[in-house]
Image (cartoon, rainbow, N blue to C red; front, side, top):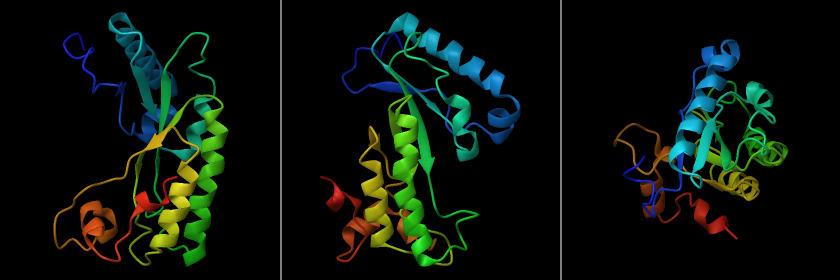
Length: 185
């Protein structure tokens, strides 16, 4: 950190990507202690960097309400990974996927009261059985407008894997490809 804290490209540090359910649910105190110690270690060297923490499991988001209160912590960001391709979403109907993406706005708004929210991962994919496509992408991007920012996962995947909706570069190169950037305001 000492060598890079002044670099203009460094804006923050994510403490842990996708902590396991074991820690998030059953060892929450241990996970909090890790985040807390890491936060204070970073603050010893830099007071302006964003310190980002991640909770992967939506049923555990409430565990983090006001845990890093602004009176004791600052520049703390919550990273949410919002996907709609895996179980239990895989078997949903077409418009259920769109509804899910629209509901993300309310989720982001709820937790933005406590922390700036970054969507650290999301995908244009809606599962292995049905791809909703552009309507899902539009609903997702519209929901993300109330966040501090978002990242699409991911730019490129191996060829011939049949996961075209995960490949942003491929979608960008297609004439009728999915393009979340056209919905930015």
